[in-house]
Amino acid sequence: MKINTHTLKNGIRIIHQQVESPAAHFGIILNTGSRDEQTIEQGIAHFIEHVIFKGTKKRKAFHIISRIEDVGGELNAYTTKEETAVYATFLNEHYDRSMELISDIITNSVFPKKEIEREKEVVIEEINSYKDSPSELIFDEFDELLFDGHPIARNILGTPDHVKSFKRDDIIQFVKKNYHTDEMVLSSVGNIPFEEFLNLSEKYFADIPEHPRQQARLLFDHYTPGNLTIEKDTFQAHCVIGNIAFNAQSEKRMGMVLLNNILGGQSMNSRLNMALRERNGIAYNIESNYTAFSDTGQFNVYFGTDRENMNRALRLVKKEFNLLKTKALGTLQLSKAKKQLIGQIAISSENRDDLMLTLGKSFLLYNKVDNLAAIYKKIDAITSSQLLGIANEIFDEKSLSTLIYE
Image (tube, rainbow, N blue to C red; front, side):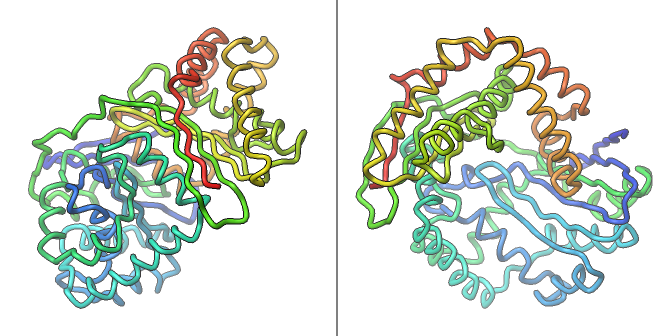
């Protein structure tokens, strides 16, 4: 289906795909995340995600929630290292209501002091819940090991002490400094014509004053591999092993996506799942992940196992690394791997909520969106020799970092 785009006079970009469905999805995605915080602001981007719903110049918190939920819709938000998003799912007939509400939230939030103090306790409980979950906490601590000293290294939630220190003026200043109109995208997937979506975008977002980004992010340009073992009072041992990887603009990014999927992607027949779980029965959770940032990237493998199996599991992971470094995929293996990834992408595109966010993020990063046919073509163009080269670069023993909880 056709994807339409436009740029408002203030620099905000819009993207819309019309689909035959009674449900619609709309959101605003901002190129602002935890890596844009100063050291004393750690956790504030995520904290804003919480308090931005707590009142505007014309609505109380209850009225914000009820505005969408009263008509059966859902309102949500998320924060990552580089993005903040506020989005909603609703019936097509409620486009005007939903877009007006999100515009009100983004432009007119007043951040009431009482709500700020109340929400601090909520976020601190969220932080504590992560501390009780070693399989989640280990990823944050691995970031600290991998990106040592850089803003990307800091966890998104912040620390209890940082959260307790936030004042209303701190929040207002962060929004003013980091919410840039030329790095905002309005993304929509629903059953209305593009002209109608464009008119609503003009109506509710065109009056936002132009505010382009003036200062570039601090680039990550150093990496020193590290190995760290931390004693934890847990039933299982946990491990993350990985390396820095390709940024979002890299020509090798799609090859890395395919290689990651072969090694430890979502399918049960991934190499790591077969090696550790199916053939040896020493891990229940085993996965690999690749995240591309604007200037760098990260690849990692995570698994949990009994303490006595830790060294054996690590050897099996490194064995799979070495196989991908030394043995090129045959024609049939490569063809199956490509078909698997293409199938996963096709199926995920049927989730319209995810599709809306994917379109918005792609337009935010690349100022264009490839259709599925173009994505499939890029996957089909990947060669065994390219995957071999990527494997030797990313799985290089001397470049790997390892964090173990035991």
